[in-house]
Image 1: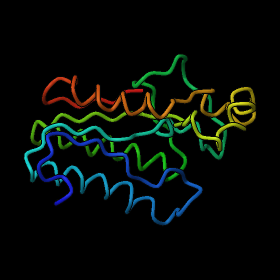
Image 2 (image 1 turned 90 degrees about the vertical axis):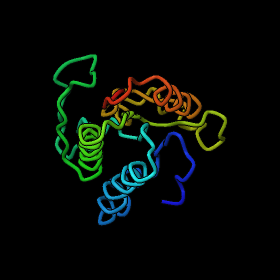
Image 3 (image 1 turned 135 degrees about the horizontal axis):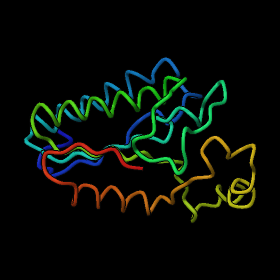
Length: 171
């Protein structure tokens, strides 16, 4: 609650970022964490919240059994067909945010981020050389990525420009 005091808007990006880590903690951290942020926003009269959803909500990226997109290019209306708890946690966050919008008119925007890369980081040099061209490594996320500065800009623009009292999920 104290972390959002005095804020006009919230950009929420905290989460366990994949099903490969701390599987038993995904729901408490990702789902309850997002609910806590929305509760704090409501309690403090903050009416604009943008949060990190994920392309994993589509269910393709971490699929145990391969599934293909139902259509391309994929958009926000594409069905969510999750097979893992991480993707499911992101779908539940989207539904939770939509419920807060319906209940109190809070503007909520879920950005379905894909692989977030920091091109200035040396640790991403292998990915830059090989990851973009590896069909095996990249086919499940449809060779998509976003640079970290573009992701930050997307959150700011979403918070500043979403129509009042609406819920959106955006790719």
